[in-house]
Amino acid sequence: MTQLRYLLLISRQGKVRLMKWYTPLSSKEKTKITNELTQTVLARKPKMCNIINYSDHKVVYRRYASLYFIAGITPDIGNELLTLELIHRYVETMDAYFGNVCELDIIFNFTKAYDILNEMIMCDGSLAESSKRNILQTMTAMDSMDNHDKLDRVLS
Image 1 (tube, rainbow, N blue to C red):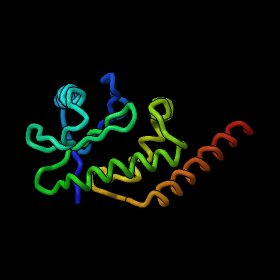
Image 2 (image 1 turned 90 degrees about the vertical axis):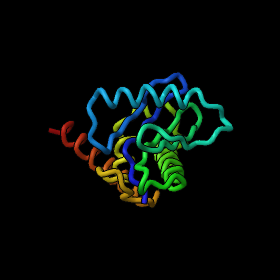
Image 3 (image 1 turned 45 degrees about the vertical axis):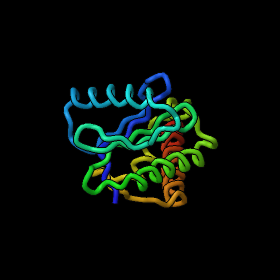
């Protein structure tokens, strides 16, 4: 079982595209972690290991196109390979939902990117759902409710 501390999506230019914190930290600590990891990960060469030690925990990252997916995991129960698989499953699910996901999809539909992540990971950082099919069914149901609410507002 992997226990996430946070998940960051950073562009190659160092811009934060999404961040989700699963452990309580001050805004100063969050900023410090984000800035240091952005510099560290962007400076690493492509052939280097995707797992690094940082402070009191481990960091697992993976690059997809123009985005780096960076996850902090607890050192005692965190599983690095499972975390890489979790990142990959998140990307696959977004890819299926958006139809070949890109950085712009995340920028302009960040609430949907968070919704997908919230379906996968519980608020304590543990895995909630690993089935891409189940997550996509939930997202479809949420979209259907959103469309129904919009239609009600237009008609009233």
